[in-house]
Structure formats: C-alpha cells, structure tokens
Amino acid sequence: MESARLSVRVHPRARRNQLTEVRDSVVSAGVTAWDVGDQANALVIALLSGRLRVSTEHVTIVSGGGARVKQVRIDTLGQAAVDARLRGLGADARRRSRRRRIGALGVAMVGLAAVAIVITSGSDGSARHDASPRRSPARADAIARRTAARRRTAVPSRPRPDPGRLPQTARLPSARTHEFAVRMRGLWAAIAGAPIRAAGAAFFPEAAYVQLKSVGDPAGDFEYRLFYDYRLDIAAAHALLGVGGTASRLIRTAAVAGYAHWVPPGVCDNRVGYYELPNTRLVYRENGQLHSIGIASLISWRGVWYVVHLGAILRGSAGGVVDAPSAGPGVSADAGTC
Image (cartoon, rainbow, N blue to C red; front, top):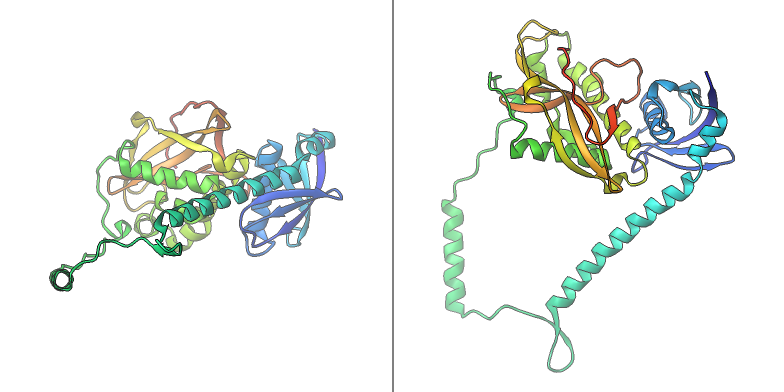
C-alpha cells in the first residue's frame, strides 16, 4: 500500500477549521480547538481527509499528538499525489478570505445606501434627517397613555418548557414539517461554516438523553461522546465541501418514512422507547453540482425527529466521519437498530 508523510503545524483557537497554506513543506492548519491535543488532532484528520479525498481511517497522526507540529501518515496515496492535492492551498485560502471581505463590504455598502435614503438635503444645503410628520401635543399624550395602559394590562408570556424534560410519547414524527426543515437548515449552516450553535436545535436534547439512557453517567456520555462526535462529524463534513463550501445550499432532506421503526425499552441500554429513522440524506448544491451526505440515525422525542448520530453509529477512529458522501442525491438504505 502506498503512503506519504506530512508535517502539520496547528494553530489552535482559530475562528474556523481550515488548512491555510503549505510553507517549507509544512501544512498550516487553523482549528477551533482550544489546545493542540485530542480535539485538534481529530479536526486535523478531518481537514486532511476532506482535502486529500481519502477516508479518515487512512489519515494517522504518528507523532506530535500533544504538540503544535504533528507528523501525519497518509495511506493509499503516494507522496506525489498528496503534494498535487495540496497544491494551491494558500491561493484557495486567500480566495475564501477575499470573498468574505467582499461580502462584508457589500453589507456595509447596503447600510450606507440605507443611510443615504434616510438623510436628505435641507433647503439651505445642509444635511438633515427626514422626520415623520409632527404630531400635536394632545395626540402624542393620548398615544403615550394608550401605550402605558397596554403595558400594564399585557399578560407576560410563559417560557416554553424544555421538551427534553417532558415525558416521551409514542407519536411517530414526520420529516415533512416546517419545524424539521428549520432544524435541518441549521445543521447545514454549521456544516457550511457557521458556528456549531446553529446545529444545536437539530440534535437530540440532553435532558431527553438523560431520561432515555440506562448507562451509569448519561449526562457525561452525552457531552463527551455523543455531542463530541456530532461536532467532529460536522467538521469532517465541512472539510469535505472544499473551497465553495460556504456558498453551498441545502436543497432538501430526503428521508424514507418506511424505514422508521419503534425501538422498545430495554434495547441498546435504553429505559424509554423511541422511533428510529436511519440513513436520511442531506441533498445540497455546491458550485452548480448536486451532492449529498447521509445522517446515520435520527430518533424521536415527543413526535419530533432529532439527529443522534450524524456520521456513523459505530466508529473505528477518533476522528469525524462523513456518512456515505455521494455525487447526486445518493441512495438511502435501511439499517438495524443501535
């Protein structure tokens, strides 16, 4: 089997996860992790996997796991192929930065145009703000009294309860609701480069997971395994998108309703039953081409689908996983529980 070696210099606490340049045969990688340890290693593996178009299982950090400079082995590719796929890395990063600057400039120009519309020239040539017609003092006082009365009589809105703290129901969810579409758009926004909080609503609620699981420390399992893997899988999917990733657009979420099945209590270390829906597809358009990736498993809570495993249910490495990336819409396949 062919293999190649790379030196990677990690820059933690970056604003986004990206490979930025190759200088003196060393690849620079910005990662959002706060140190250069395990989380940074997983992000480096995901970034290299996406750039080199190889599985994360074929990217191994052989030394420097806790250091800023890491030595990485790439299996299945020779050194010439790796160098070719890394060529132009700096130019790609500069193009992304230039697009972000142009976008920010466009927003600023729109704001200036709005200000220019509001500000008009006075008869004496000086600038003045266009004001609404003046109201009489009596009318202004009447409006103020009505507003104050409304505030006194207004009923304060009740905070919405956390659905994860409510009991489970046996209602079968639908993947065709507006609520589900909004959650999936949030997930895709994070995959395309938005902060991870954009994908939070799509993930299974922590309080529900604590109710659901019969393991020793369900809250710890949620934070340090389940949601940790979710973040890694989002980073891996983002790395897969490449240069045009931030401009990619989610077209639809393709779910096969017939694959949904009830998982009874007592199975898979669960105290509570739920519906599971495997292998839903996120179909997106990037650079004019249709692509798709999978969601390994959705499960239900109170009649709503949530992501519980994005890249894989069982994984053989510490890095993020992209589930069945495909050119075109791909094909969903039924799968077993757990």
